[in-house]
Image (cartoon, rainbow, N blue to C red):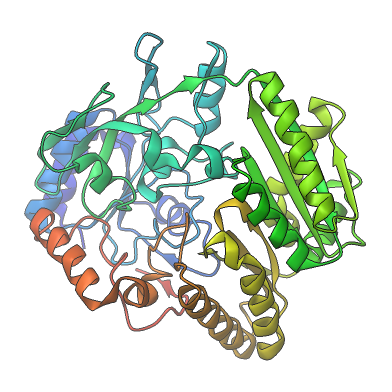
Length: 470
């Protein structure tokens, strides 16, 4: 519990209007996009600047109050559920693009900036910020950094981590540190920037970020390749990359996902094929033209039944939007939708998709699969009903087997969703006991009182979805 003394100190820092411990206010921030996972915080606070964040953390350190930094709550690993109570920290006041530096190709932003707002702002200047999570219309840069978010363009351009040049962060004792900067090279000491990116708020609170920008690509083309054979689609992916072509986007949707997305989007997607590859390339106009011709040839050689180029940017955008809407479309099927995240080497995609289908049949659950075929990142998604305890047991067992299969094929338990609370029981499968112990040592060194987003990343004995009330 937050004592009355601590509460008054916190209110003095941010003002009464930015401190909310009402039942309704706490309930709103008790869950994120993770299905059937909820925990009530003791208060919600909205600091206005880095100094206030630092002062809040100092009070929390003194009174041992947990702190959970939160963006828009779009994460899928219960990363922003305050499972040990404490304070949820909002960044609605810290939401400005501070600078777009065209000389150094950087943007400096506060953590509450909406991802798509940044993308649009830099594009107005002929620049490009590539990370594009499906939630980019509402997700924040701070949340993207905490989870090291990916996106459809990850194959060619990388993920959020690859665009973070420097950070300002508040540590668990209230100290403010700055890492990196507007530099193409910097090897002075440990790479603290990379350490903080993807740490899910467990090591510090991001209050400012310097991000790398790149020139806007000159041209872009989008293609849809249709297959009646999953293996043929997977072979196409491997052969495209082996031909030294790195598409900007190389996405996979299986037939169950296609049917649901088309029912939702109504854009004329084919639903009578086993799989679809959504392929996009950008760059110099002549290069795009040449490489898209090569990709078309490869797909046809690998038994694509049809290869279609988008005839306009509107048509291409409709295809991209349909792919991004896969979760929303699947959520219409059952009361609960569990979207997961497993990554394998791209050469193992066909084996992984086949294994997912076999596992779904074994546990008598429906699983639709889509994802980033080019980088091996698949999203098996299960429409279910959390009110059916017996079915949920089967669902959880199926996903545990899926994660085990991904690791067996040389993959990992998460490519972009993060560990949070949901993947914590499986972290040791990937890193081994020694790897987890190294991470725990870093956590203890930077956060000795365990107040920074406690209960995340490091394993609990179960993955069960919980509701915690206070």
